[in-house]
Image (cartoon, rainbow, N blue to C red; front, side, top):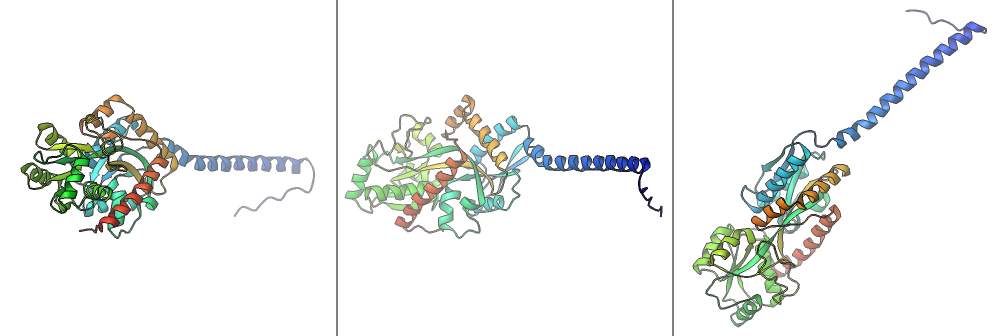
Length: 346
């Protein structure tokens, strides 16, 4: 081992050695400071270049449905805008709960998103015992689009608007029936909301999907139904069913001639399917904000507006706070309908 050199007690040599040591210490300090600054800056740079790899977008329903269509449309635009693939991954099952839980348990790094819906975010938590809470465990990014439900009836039913339908149902309590695509979805709850607001007693007949319910409506086996506009629009245009009103508070660009339930005299009626992107809670706010800004920009483009209109949807957008408030208010509203109708999961 090399022995340590002792400093002279005094004199020019001692001064020279102290100066040299001081310079070395300063160099070491500068190196340490630079290293710390680089370490602190690393997360900022990584966040600033987001995304730097493909982003997974979980869709908790099978391909081909409204949730899947909206997810693929916005993912395609985000891929083009941000320079990385946004890859849709369908994880269906348990009314959408499996896919949402998968997203909740994913790393909060911005590379796993989920396309949530009115059903998975506001209705399912009130029908199922879930190991997660959407409003607590997910960070809202932006509501992408809404899909109106539409009230359609058999062409043979002698009514022209929702008020006439309610009046007819009251003269025949329990004689009219309505179909829906499932128990607990927004079409089903739209029917129960209609009953609660009008006092009409109409029997609910649940189906496993929209298509068989529509076929039974066309053939006259059921009298009416509420359904998502994209599924019902071809039947309306061909005249196989009669449309009375859409269930949103504003008319939709996809069917501008159809009045709203409110315009038709059924006050307080607001029901729609809607779809929005979320990330696991704890995802960096800068990533959430960037995605929100990009989605709102995309929603403002004419080609995306036209695309949504073709599939029977309307763009929404807005802030993350708007999305959070939508989840809160709709959870409250649907909770009242679920309680009124004593709806339970299958």
